[in-house]
Image 1 (spheres, chains in turn purple, orange):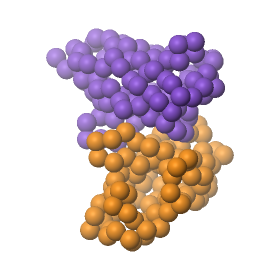
Image 2 (cartoon, rainbow over the protein chains, first blue to last red):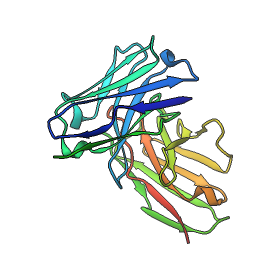
Image 3 (cartoon, rainbow over the protein chains, first blue to last red):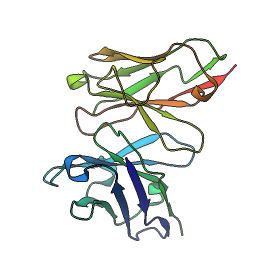
Image 4 (cartoon, one colour):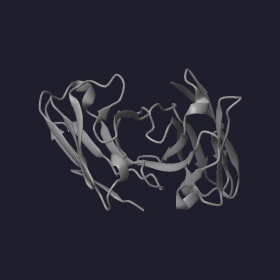
Length: 114
Length: 108
């Protein structure tokens, strides 16, 4: 399992970012995929999960209506569109394979600050 | 929402000792959809146990998981140097797929 996140950076409150996760060394289209985040010095927080064909999506309440998880099975890629960002969204964002997160990327840092 | 509580918060042990970590759920976890992860300092987490008791590929047999319903346990039979880390449980049976707050295993 090889997962590489990208797209993180510094953004002002209210701004937007789109995270990407490039998957390889497994059959991407066969797996649910998940985003998990970790605020500095804090524990893990599940963010969102998407079914193999994109027909089911689940979100933590704190991001509902602001974040959108999506995928492109032809490109072996997972995405997280983050809008209306808040200071409390500051974290390292990881993509992971499956609902039981068997395989993780190295993470990408999102910093929301004015 | 299923709330997971992990205890103890910190476990101070010596290499070679046995570690017993607890994860308690606020309601029954469906189909034993409970996972354990290890996170070493500065690294991404890695899956140790899924389905409450199945070891992930490549995980040494000194790691074992048990439990069902609302009470789950991760046991490390004999601690090795690389096992000193933070351990999280997660339930993935019902959305939101919540994590516990973690147990830190440090060197005594």
